[in-house]
Length: 71
Image 1: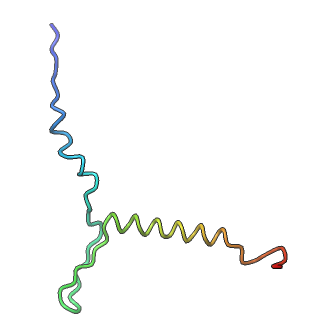
Image 2: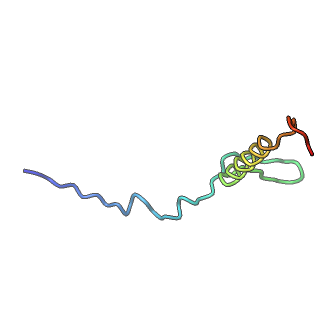
């Protein structure tokens, strides 16, 4: 006797937009100048990584110690 199991896949993924959810990775509540909430989100982390990557490649590609002449 074989039994078949049915899986309801509609409960696994609630919405395709869940992958774009902005999440707080690091949060800091400052009591200076009122109640300021500083937070680093996943979007901010991606922007920082991208900026550092572009700046790093720019520094590597720019040769300040030139071997040849500058003329």
